[in-house]
Image (cartoon, rainbow, N blue to C red; front, side, top):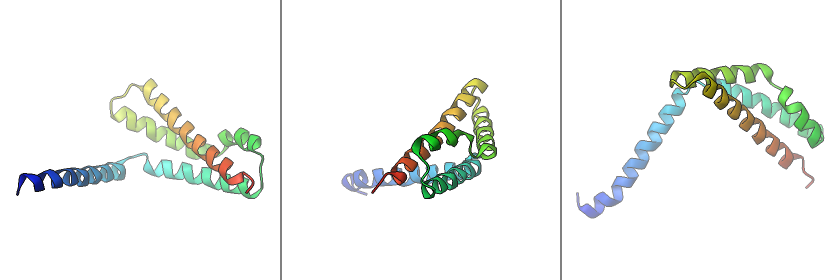
Amino acid sequence: MSPALLALTAPLALLATSSSAAAALQGNDPTTAARNAYTACLRQFMDRSVRERVAADAFRTALPQQCTQQEQAFRESLIRREIGFRTPRSEAEETANMEVEDARSNFLQLFEMGSSPS
């Protein structure tokens, strides 16, 4: 293979390898099922709130009280995963808190976009 052709194909091979590795890691992520259950529950709450024309302040207040069982399962799976990486428990709990907060923040933004007047 010529050096020029190698220079062109090497990045593509690396990208393909990286994509395959990322897909494999995501498929093996022990938090996937819990994350999907939690976000599906939040989506149902958000969709219902948009249909019912819930005010943004009311949605923001009610959001943390929704999907508590799914949230707890998600938190526990995140903590287990992080502890499996030998992360100290306090850091694992902080990571779980950030991930839950990110999910809530995402749905709050989606709600605000979906409930704004057209």
